[in-house]
Image (cartoon, rainbow, N blue to C red; front, top):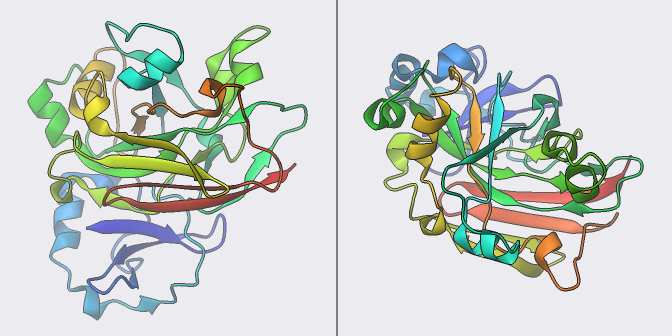
Length: 280
């Protein structure tokens, strides 16, 4: 299934994509796409629903973040071999973890807002893993079974805040609108191999990132198991699994987003995002 949330900001309703690419309203069946509705039993009930029996929604509607009330937004750094090389660093021997504020989450086509004083706003297309189970010290098999689905993430960064001054990754990653997710949550049963997906990103029509999840140092399922060693995971939590080479910081000379720029990105089978960069 391809699940999504649609409607005005703060008033989103749950939906699914039907066989013709239309949007169907799920709000008579689930309150929202969060926590309990992302657990395996709830997703199985939704799979049995005939989409043609659900109200159809105009495709002109705003698409919101594909998960509501995310509890944790966990990110993985330097998880692509080519990205580690462009950063001049060795591939890590174990996953590098950091947190992104959940208030950074926005819809896949919402504007990117450059906060006051920001000078080095960068792009990062990433595969997002959305949890559908409570996990703690999970085995690989338990981790795989506990994944509700996958989505596109743009892990936007302000590099000066991230790496200069006090050098705090959370501070550089957490501005409002710095976490577009969606357009869809594609359930795990429709992603036969999360380690064989192409992903790409363009700025103003110029291809900047062009990679494959095959290049990950640590795979999606391995990351879920690893993170669960250090903290419990709950349905609706998101793990953003790292980005391939081609970020603005890695260009020579470095190039960052400016007001008026357009960003377009996607992952094979998981949909597209399109964003405009505006000032605060």
